Amino acid sequence: MPEQPQTARGAATYQRIVDAATEEFAQHGIAGARIERIVKAARTNKAQLYAYFGDKDQLFDAIFLGSLERITNVVPIDADDLPDWAVRLYDEYLRRPDLIRLATWTRLERRPDGHLVDTRERYDDRKLAAIAEAQAAGRVRAGDPFDIMAMVIAMSMAWSPVSNVYAATSEEPDAVHEQRRALLRDCVRGATTPA
Image (cartoon, rainbow, N blue to C red):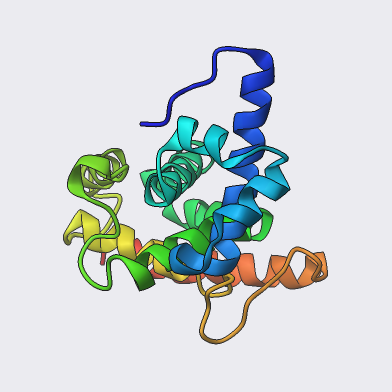
């Protein structure tokens, strides 16, 4: 766990490191990221970075786990409205494409199969419980709650920065995004509604 700064000045430096590291890791991955570029962008030095985060791998872990927590908190699941949850994820990918890139680098460089994060670090337990509860009430189709969640997330990523087909940007016309949101809602609704 990163050492938290004790002063306002330290907190500002810490945040600059987080911001610079997020951009660096999102652009270059774990292997390609350079501490020298991070400290230069953060206007600090290696000693300060290492004091807060330890080594490069620990810095990436802090950035990546923080991104998972952000997605969980900014886009909380509503198992009674999985289509809207998918759309809110789509919108978050437009706002913060770096967050989805961090997950992709983790998949490419650390975990080519299985769960994206260790069980002890997963933030999906609340999501799975919410889906299971909606299933028990007959509002979401039967099936493994994890598989339902994974499918909805995958559908929300259809136009994400890591799409194999097309990566949307926030600069595209609102009408285009509205068409995608409508399609995404319909597809998720069809896939998750009980038969």
